[in-house]
Length: 303
Ligand SMILES: *Cc1c(COP(=O)(O)O)cnc(C)c1O
Image 1: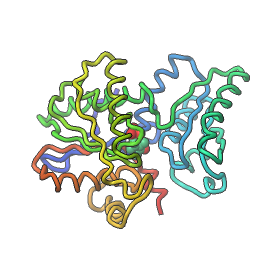
Image 2: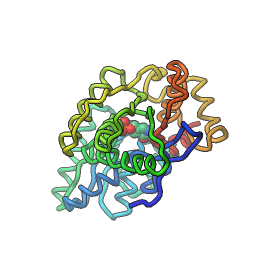
Image 3: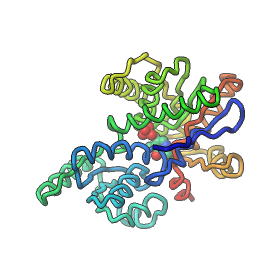
Image 4: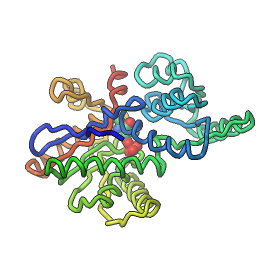
Protein backbone atom coordinates (compact mmCIF):
# COMPACT_ATOMS: atom_id res chain seq x y z
CA UNK A 1 0.00 0.00 0.00
CA UNK A 2 0.95 3.61 -0.36
CA UNK A 3 2.90 5.19 2.46
CA UNK A 4 2.19 8.73 1.33
CA UNK A 5 -1.12 10.46 0.97
CA UNK A 6 -2.58 12.42 -1.90
CA UNK A 7 -4.11 15.21 0.13
CA UNK A 8 -2.72 18.66 -0.67
CA UNK A 9 -3.29 21.85 1.27
CA UNK A 10 -4.38 25.01 -0.53
CA UNK A 11 -5.06 26.91 2.70
CA UNK A 12 -5.87 26.12 6.33
CA UNK A 13 -9.45 25.26 5.55
CA UNK A 14 -9.26 24.18 1.91
CA UNK A 15 -7.66 20.90 0.85
CA UNK A 16 -7.60 18.85 -2.34
CA UNK A 17 -7.65 15.06 -2.50
CA UNK A 18 -5.41 14.62 -5.55
CA UNK A 19 -6.84 11.47 -7.10
CA UNK A 20 -5.82 13.01 -10.39
CA UNK A 21 -2.37 11.91 -9.23
CA UNK A 22 -3.46 8.40 -8.25
CA UNK A 23 -0.29 6.60 -9.27
CA UNK A 24 -1.58 3.60 -11.22
CA UNK A 25 -3.35 2.90 -14.53
CA UNK A 26 -3.22 6.53 -15.64
CA UNK A 27 -4.75 7.78 -12.39
CA UNK A 28 -8.06 9.34 -11.47
CA UNK A 29 -11.01 7.69 -9.80
CA UNK A 30 -11.18 5.11 -12.60
CA UNK A 31 -7.59 4.06 -11.87
CA UNK A 32 -8.45 3.73 -8.19
CA UNK A 33 -11.64 1.79 -8.93
CA UNK A 34 -9.88 -0.51 -11.40
CA UNK A 35 -7.23 -1.44 -8.86
CA UNK A 36 -10.00 -2.55 -6.51
CA UNK A 37 -11.80 -4.44 -9.30
CA UNK A 38 -8.47 -6.11 -10.13
CA UNK A 39 -8.53 -8.00 -6.84
CA UNK A 40 -11.81 -9.63 -7.87
CA UNK A 41 -10.46 -10.37 -11.36
CA UNK A 42 -7.49 -12.23 -9.88
CA UNK A 43 -9.71 -13.98 -7.35
CA UNK A 44 -11.84 -15.32 -10.19
CA UNK A 45 -8.79 -16.23 -12.31
CA UNK A 46 -10.20 -14.24 -15.19
CA UNK A 47 -7.97 -13.59 -18.19
CA UNK A 48 -10.16 -11.52 -20.52
CA UNK A 49 -12.04 -8.29 -19.80
CA UNK A 50 -15.11 -6.79 -21.44
CA UNK A 51 -16.32 -3.28 -20.73
CA UNK A 52 -17.81 -0.16 -22.29
CA UNK A 53 -17.65 3.63 -22.32
CA UNK A 54 -17.32 6.72 -24.47
CA UNK A 55 -14.37 7.76 -26.65
CA UNK A 56 -12.85 9.74 -23.78
CA UNK A 57 -13.79 7.24 -21.08
CA UNK A 58 -11.35 7.29 -18.19
CA UNK A 59 -12.77 3.95 -17.15
CA UNK A 60 -12.08 2.23 -20.50
CA UNK A 61 -8.57 3.70 -20.46
CA UNK A 62 -7.88 2.30 -16.98
CA UNK A 63 -9.21 -1.13 -17.98
CA UNK A 64 -7.18 -1.16 -21.23
CA UNK A 65 -3.97 -0.17 -19.42
CA UNK A 66 -4.61 -2.76 -16.72
CA UNK A 67 -5.14 -5.48 -19.34
CA UNK A 68 -1.89 -4.52 -21.07
CA UNK A 69 0.05 -4.59 -17.80
CA UNK A 70 -1.21 -8.04 -16.86
CA UNK A 71 -1.30 -9.49 -20.39
CA UNK A 72 -5.04 -10.09 -20.32
CA UNK A 73 -7.34 -10.04 -23.31
CA UNK A 74 -9.57 -6.98 -23.40
CA UNK A 75 -12.56 -5.85 -25.47
CA UNK A 76 -13.87 -2.31 -25.28
CA UNK A 77 -17.33 -1.62 -26.70
CA UNK A 78 -17.48 2.03 -27.69
CA UNK A 79 -20.48 3.98 -28.89
CA UNK A 80 -19.86 6.10 -32.02
CA UNK A 81 -17.99 6.14 -35.29
CA UNK A 82 -14.51 4.71 -35.75
CA UNK A 83 -13.43 7.65 -37.92
CA UNK A 84 -14.24 10.11 -35.16
CA UNK A 85 -12.44 7.95 -32.58
CA UNK A 86 -9.28 7.76 -34.73
CA UNK A 87 -9.00 11.56 -34.72
CA UNK A 88 -9.10 11.99 -30.94
CA UNK A 89 -6.17 12.18 -28.52
CA UNK A 90 -6.32 11.81 -24.73
CA UNK A 91 -7.91 8.58 -23.54
CA UNK A 92 -8.79 7.58 -27.12
CA UNK A 93 -5.11 7.55 -28.04
CA UNK A 94 -4.23 5.41 -25.03
CA UNK A 95 -7.03 2.95 -25.84
CA UNK A 96 -5.96 2.75 -29.49
CA UNK A 97 -2.39 1.93 -28.54
CA UNK A 98 -3.20 -0.42 -25.66
CA UNK A 99 -3.65 -3.61 -27.66
CA UNK A 100 -7.29 -3.94 -26.62
CA UNK A 101 -9.85 -4.98 -29.19
CA UNK A 102 -12.23 -2.11 -29.86
CA UNK A 103 -15.74 -2.68 -31.19
CA UNK A 104 -17.83 0.29 -32.31
CA UNK A 105 -21.62 0.33 -32.11
CA UNK A 106 -23.84 2.89 -33.80
CA UNK A 107 -26.64 2.88 -31.23
CA UNK A 108 -26.24 2.90 -27.46
CA UNK A 109 -28.97 0.24 -27.35
CA UNK A 110 -26.51 -2.19 -29.01
CA UNK A 111 -23.94 -1.96 -26.21
CA UNK A 112 -25.42 -4.67 -23.97
CA UNK A 113 -25.81 -7.31 -26.66
CA UNK A 114 -22.35 -6.53 -28.08
CA UNK A 115 -20.75 -6.97 -24.66
CA UNK A 116 -22.64 -10.23 -24.14
CA UNK A 117 -21.42 -11.47 -27.51
CA UNK A 118 -17.82 -10.59 -26.66
CA UNK A 119 -18.16 -12.48 -23.36
CA UNK A 120 -19.52 -15.52 -25.20
CA UNK A 121 -16.76 -15.41 -27.79
CA UNK A 122 -14.06 -15.39 -25.13
CA UNK A 123 -15.66 -18.42 -23.50
CA UNK A 124 -15.80 -20.29 -26.81
CA UNK A 125 -12.10 -19.55 -27.29
CA UNK A 126 -11.34 -21.04 -23.87
CA UNK A 127 -10.81 -17.82 -21.93
CA UNK A 128 -12.29 -16.93 -18.56
CA UNK A 129 -13.90 -13.54 -19.30
CA UNK A 130 -14.86 -10.87 -16.75
CA UNK A 131 -17.61 -8.33 -17.32
CA UNK A 132 -17.10 -4.80 -15.99
CA UNK A 133 -20.01 -2.36 -15.87
CA UNK A 134 -19.34 0.97 -17.53
CA UNK A 135 -17.66 3.49 -15.26
CA UNK A 136 -16.48 0.71 -12.93
CA UNK A 137 -19.84 1.01 -11.21
CA UNK A 138 -19.47 -2.20 -9.20
CA UNK A 139 -19.19 -3.18 -5.53
CA UNK A 140 -15.42 -3.25 -5.86
CA UNK A 141 -15.44 0.19 -7.47
CA UNK A 142 -17.40 1.47 -4.49
CA UNK A 143 -15.05 -0.31 -2.09
CA UNK A 144 -12.16 1.62 -3.61
CA UNK A 145 -13.73 4.79 -2.21
CA UNK A 146 -14.67 3.27 1.14
CA UNK A 147 -10.97 2.47 1.50
CA UNK A 148 -9.93 5.90 0.23
CA UNK A 149 -11.75 7.50 3.16
CA UNK A 150 -9.25 5.66 5.39
CA UNK A 151 -6.52 7.72 3.73
CA UNK A 152 -8.52 10.85 4.54
CA UNK A 153 -8.83 9.72 8.15
CA UNK A 154 -5.09 9.07 8.46
CA UNK A 155 -4.45 12.54 7.09
CA UNK A 156 -7.02 14.00 9.48
CA UNK A 157 -5.45 12.40 12.52
CA UNK A 158 -1.96 13.43 11.52
CA UNK A 159 -2.91 17.02 10.70
CA UNK A 160 -5.88 17.52 13.00
CA UNK A 161 -8.04 18.45 10.03
CA UNK A 162 -11.41 17.00 9.08
CA UNK A 163 -13.68 18.28 6.33
CA UNK A 164 -17.11 19.76 7.00
CA UNK A 165 -17.85 19.49 3.27
CA UNK A 166 -16.55 17.25 0.50
CA UNK A 167 -17.25 18.33 -3.09
CA UNK A 168 -16.65 16.18 -6.17
CA UNK A 169 -17.87 15.38 -9.68
CA UNK A 170 -20.61 12.73 -9.67
CA UNK A 171 -21.38 10.55 -12.70
CA UNK A 172 -22.37 6.90 -12.24
CA UNK A 173 -22.47 7.59 -8.51
CA UNK A 174 -20.13 4.87 -7.24
CA UNK A 175 -17.46 7.33 -6.13
CA UNK A 176 -20.01 9.26 -4.09
CA UNK A 177 -21.69 6.15 -2.66
CA UNK A 178 -18.29 4.76 -1.69
CA UNK A 179 -17.29 8.01 0.03
CA UNK A 180 -20.60 8.06 1.96
CA UNK A 181 -20.17 4.48 3.13
CA UNK A 182 -16.51 5.20 3.95
CA UNK A 183 -17.46 8.19 6.08
CA UNK A 184 -19.82 5.93 8.03
CA UNK A 185 -17.17 3.27 8.42
CA UNK A 186 -14.44 5.64 9.58
CA UNK A 187 -16.49 7.81 11.90
CA UNK A 188 -16.80 11.11 10.05
CA UNK A 189 -20.00 12.05 11.79
CA UNK A 190 -20.56 15.58 10.59
CA UNK A 191 -19.02 15.62 7.13
CA UNK A 192 -21.42 16.46 4.30
CA UNK A 193 -20.83 15.28 0.74
CA UNK A 194 -21.99 17.42 -2.16
CA UNK A 195 -21.84 15.62 -5.49
CA UNK A 196 -21.96 17.90 -8.50
CA UNK A 197 -23.75 16.02 -11.26
CA UNK A 198 -21.91 15.95 -14.58
CA UNK A 199 -24.93 14.76 -16.57
CA UNK A 200 -27.92 13.38 -14.71
CA UNK A 201 -30.80 15.28 -13.19
CA UNK A 202 -30.76 15.54 -9.43
CA UNK A 203 -33.70 13.30 -8.68
CA UNK A 204 -32.39 10.30 -10.60
CA UNK A 205 -28.75 10.83 -9.56
CA UNK A 206 -29.64 11.15 -5.88
CA UNK A 207 -31.70 7.97 -5.98
CA UNK A 208 -28.89 6.01 -7.61
CA UNK A 209 -26.27 7.29 -5.14
CA UNK A 210 -28.53 6.61 -2.17
CA UNK A 211 -29.44 3.06 -3.26
CA UNK A 212 -25.84 2.16 -3.99
CA UNK A 213 -24.62 3.73 -0.71
CA UNK A 214 -27.02 1.49 1.21
CA UNK A 215 -26.09 -1.56 -0.85
CA UNK A 216 -22.40 -0.93 -0.19
CA UNK A 217 -23.01 -0.62 3.56
CA UNK A 218 -24.91 -3.86 3.61
CA UNK A 219 -22.49 -5.73 1.30
CA UNK A 220 -19.42 -4.67 3.29
CA UNK A 221 -21.07 -4.84 6.74
CA UNK A 222 -20.82 -1.16 7.54
CA UNK A 223 -23.24 0.41 10.01
CA UNK A 224 -25.13 2.80 7.76
CA UNK A 225 -25.78 6.24 9.27
CA UNK A 226 -28.29 7.11 6.53
CA UNK A 227 -26.49 10.26 5.54
CA UNK A 228 -28.21 12.49 3.08
CA UNK A 229 -27.20 11.76 -0.52
CA UNK A 230 -26.93 15.12 -2.24
CA UNK A 231 -26.31 15.41 -5.97
CA UNK A 232 -26.78 18.90 -7.40
CA UNK A 233 -27.88 19.42 -10.99
CA UNK A 234 -27.55 23.21 -10.85
CA UNK A 235 -24.30 23.07 -12.79
CA UNK A 236 -25.14 20.75 -15.68
CA UNK A 237 -24.77 23.69 -18.07
CA UNK A 238 -26.89 21.88 -20.62
CA UNK A 239 -25.86 18.29 -19.92
CA UNK A 240 -22.98 15.83 -20.08
CA UNK A 241 -19.95 17.34 -21.77
CA UNK A 242 -21.55 20.79 -22.07
CA UNK A 243 -20.01 23.93 -20.62
CA UNK A 244 -20.27 27.71 -20.73
CA UNK A 245 -17.73 30.51 -21.13
CA UNK A 246 -17.10 30.81 -17.38
CA UNK A 247 -16.31 27.12 -17.01
CA UNK A 248 -14.13 27.21 -20.10
CA UNK A 249 -12.19 30.08 -18.56
CA UNK A 250 -11.87 28.29 -15.22
CA UNK A 251 -10.53 25.24 -17.06
CA UNK A 252 -8.03 27.14 -19.19
CA UNK A 253 -6.77 29.04 -16.12
CA UNK A 254 -6.71 26.01 -13.83
CA UNK A 255 -3.01 25.24 -14.10
CA UNK A 256 -2.01 28.87 -13.67
CA UNK A 257 -4.48 29.49 -10.83
CA UNK A 258 -4.32 26.23 -8.88
CA UNK A 259 -1.46 24.12 -10.19
CA UNK A 260 -3.68 21.26 -11.37
CA UNK A 261 -5.94 20.64 -14.35
CA UNK A 262 -9.70 21.08 -14.26
CA UNK A 263 -11.33 19.60 -17.39
CA UNK A 264 -14.68 20.96 -18.55
CA UNK A 265 -16.52 17.62 -18.40
CA UNK A 266 -15.86 16.46 -14.82
CA UNK A 267 -13.59 18.21 -12.36
CA UNK A 268 -13.99 21.71 -13.78
CA UNK A 269 -17.75 21.41 -13.57
CA UNK A 270 -17.50 20.23 -9.99
CA UNK A 271 -15.04 22.95 -9.01
CA UNK A 272 -17.19 25.58 -10.71
CA UNK A 273 -20.24 24.31 -8.84
CA UNK A 274 -18.33 24.16 -5.57
CA UNK A 275 -17.17 27.79 -5.80
CA UNK A 276 -20.72 28.94 -6.49
CA UNK A 277 -22.19 26.78 -3.72
CA UNK A 278 -19.66 28.02 -1.16
CA UNK A 279 -20.45 31.60 -2.01
CA UNK A 280 -24.23 31.22 -2.09
CA UNK A 281 -24.33 29.29 1.18
CA UNK A 282 -21.75 31.40 2.95
CA UNK A 283 -19.65 28.43 4.05
CA UNK A 284 -16.22 29.78 3.18
CA UNK A 285 -14.97 29.50 6.77
CA UNK A 286 -15.87 25.79 6.97
CA UNK A 287 -13.34 23.05 6.27
CA UNK A 288 -13.70 22.20 2.59
CA UNK A 289 -12.23 19.24 0.70
CA UNK A 290 -12.38 19.12 -3.08
CA UNK A 291 -12.02 15.50 -4.13
CA UNK A 292 -10.24 15.79 -7.47
CA UNK A 293 -11.32 12.73 -9.44
CA UNK A 294 -8.87 13.06 -12.36
CA UNK A 295 -9.67 13.94 -15.93
CA UNK A 296 -6.16 14.94 -17.00
CA UNK A 297 -6.53 13.11 -20.32
CA UNK A 298 -9.94 14.73 -20.86
CA UNK A 299 -8.27 18.08 -20.30
CA UNK A 300 -5.56 17.24 -22.82
CA UNK A 301 -8.09 16.09 -25.44
CA UNK A 302 -10.17 19.27 -25.17
CA UNK A 303 -9.64 21.90 -27.82
C1 LIG B 1 -16.05 8.91 -14.07
C2 LIG B 1 -15.54 10.19 -13.53
C3 LIG B 1 -16.23 10.88 -12.52
C4 LIG B 1 -17.52 10.38 -11.94
O1 LIG B 1 -17.31 9.27 -11.08
P1 LIG B 1 -18.50 8.28 -10.77
O2 LIG B 1 -17.95 7.31 -9.80
O3 LIG B 1 -18.89 7.64 -12.06
O4 LIG B 1 -19.62 9.08 -10.22
C5 LIG B 1 -15.70 12.05 -12.03
N1 LIG B 1 -14.54 12.54 -12.53
C6 LIG B 1 -13.85 11.92 -13.50
C7 LIG B 1 -12.59 12.53 -13.98
C8 LIG B 1 -14.32 10.71 -14.03
O5 LIG B 1 -13.64 10.08 -14.99
